[in-house]
Image (tube, rainbow, N blue to C red; front, side):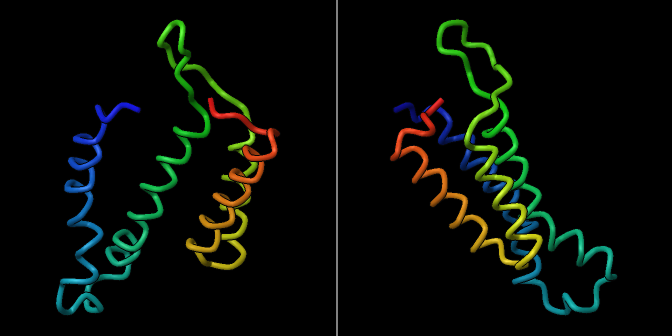
Amino acid sequence: MSVALVPLAILMGLATYPFRAVPLLAPGMHRLPARVRLYLRLVGPAVLAALAAVDTMVIIDASTRQPQFHIGAEWLAVSLCIAVVALRRSLLIGLVLAAAVISILRATGFATLP
């Protein structure tokens, strides 16, 4: 397992932390305009959606080291997560359910690691 991307993950965490922390740390957050509050509230889910989209749709071919479009069981898990979040308004339940589905599919052999 490679740890080459760990510094990038830390850097991205530091870059997105201020936007995620503003609602928790800023006094008078409720006095901001509604559009600003909506923007700040949706930063976290937008980052998770972007990460899920890339991890779901693109794999790196081992022989050529080139990205390739990928259709697999991950699409099912992400679609299920989106549906649960839309219906239940719970990101946690959606993420846990998606992780459980893909884990079961991989454990039973219906899905393999790319």
